[in-house]
Length: 381
Image (cartoon, rainbow, N blue to C red):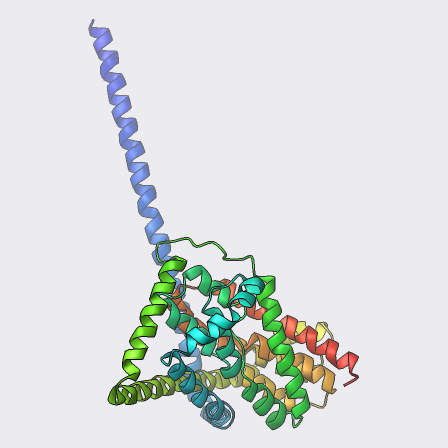
């Protein structure tokens, strides 16, 4: 009996020790996961901080270069971006509150649904994005998501065809002012818009299902649209409120345009520092292996960072009109990392997948570039 009890006690002690070790192992395993995520987050913060410190040191070491870069960026923003972007951002904001949404969306809903499998409001966002340019499309997507007119999946889908540059930038700033060729600007704009439509068709079967707690049903979206329409009608009945509407629209537009100007100025500084220190050499070398000369590859790599800077550098090159249009179409279609960050700052509020958004910008640029090449070959430009 004693031997049985002793065995039982040993068995119990072994079992308890095993459970204790297992519990400790499990406990340690759970603890070990959390520090890893914290370490990764801290590492990213340290890396980003070091990058910022690097550019601060560059500003101190080469103040003339950096100040000149920021000044050039602000000049391009003031001459080419501000005159076209500010009035259009203001008008689109006012139109949002004038019940113009209902009229546009009702007329184009069926075509929009067949092409893109997109919601009713997307036709208005697409139209305003094409007219106004970056980053109006992303801003409207974010606004209508917060109003309850879009789901997260629908916001992702709209990024495929509602993130475009505007006619005044492509035709006016790039074609006429930089390239001194308005006809090339018209070709680029036509290819840019057509590429956005084709891009939306390519991704039409992506993000078609409504999943997640934050997504609204179609019925709820219709109710929200009717509520917004009624609220806007009440606002328009009253003159002082209407004046407040205009003032708020102007305030919102100015803040958005200043945000764009800040991004452009910082992007110009980063590009000039990278070019001065030859930090973009790997990218330039890769582009040279694809058949581009050094100057064109440098302009393209700069355009990948910031569209205005890239187009400005392309305008100073002695290359054929076809190559100029093809490279510029990719740069404008992609928009550069500067435009991507501008859009991302708005789209984060709609919980958009930024990796997917980045992919759609690349495909948009490639399609626009291919279309420009086809038109230049067919019409022997």
